[in-house]
Image 1 (cartoon, rainbow over the protein chains, first blue to last red):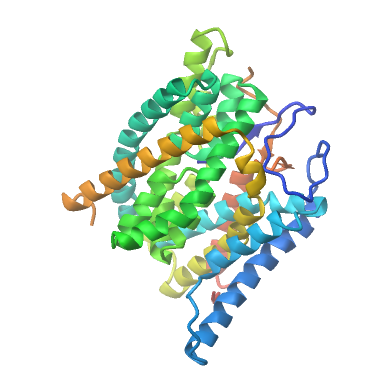
Image 2 (tube, one colour):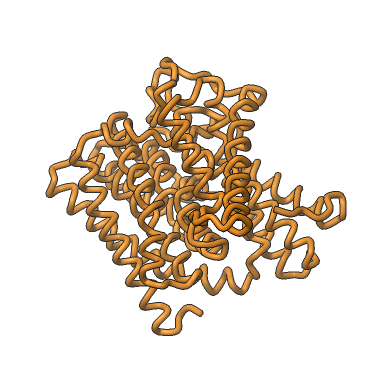
Length: 376
Length: 47
């Protein structure tokens, strides 16, 4: 998933983007904090509207006996964001604030640590690490093989393999600083990963219901199989609140591998003479480590130690849901379907085939762990 | 390719740069809010 910091590209770099139809073109200056306010207001506005719509549908269903589907605020927020992004577009003034969705997402993950006792984190997190290790080896191998079969550029294949095996866009951005790919390869890989994440949002919950997966099993699956952290959390939350939490736990375990995988690729490309040598490997690993996981663990330790009362734990948990609200809206707002499908068919085909394989493998791993009593 | 870049901020894939370290801000905010709840500065929060 996501590293916390990303080296700044040169000022003339064209950022990899999934821009909206209404976007102005041209380089963007680093956002000021005041400049983020309109976008933050839009994120919260869409999130709140989603919550209102959920409530309104609930009233219409229960009090007026209308046959309406039960659509949770998570899905409403994404749908509303998608509609705005793909119809009128996102005006330039809102874009700095929309970029803060990552902050709200990570704040929500830190706070949701209150819902996990440390022994659960160690047990399920440890299990997840084992499953992630298997998933990593298989997915990296398959994506590399598919890239060769479809004759993708080698560094694009590396980016797709890194993005699909660990944590999506952030892993790709982290790798960009380490293996020095073409800008176009980075954009293509990001577009493919985002497209596949969008597909997962709508397919995973349906498959979960079809297979009658428990909240925990489904959450583990979503955390292990869906690439981007935001999409992973949303895919889990669409199945239920508990599933969302388990997805977060599995995803954070998966994300902790990012430094090792990117380092492996950096060493490989350096040995080919196509990237710089990594001199301080320990520093490299620390820089790539997603540090917000430490915040999640800290809150979990406090909760386990009895630092909070039951009511306070409920408040912290609710606060995490408030933080996720704008993050979910941001997932919809930054997804432009036209741009996503306009990146060429071969990377997308490789991505789709690879993701189907990863989804099946991780589903099999989750089934295996539950059938053998490894998970509860 | 430099692997130690002191000028580190966060660039989202929407192409925008936030002049902050998102992870550290998320941790600081999360711990602060949890402490405020723990010590009764913030009371019950519902959703």
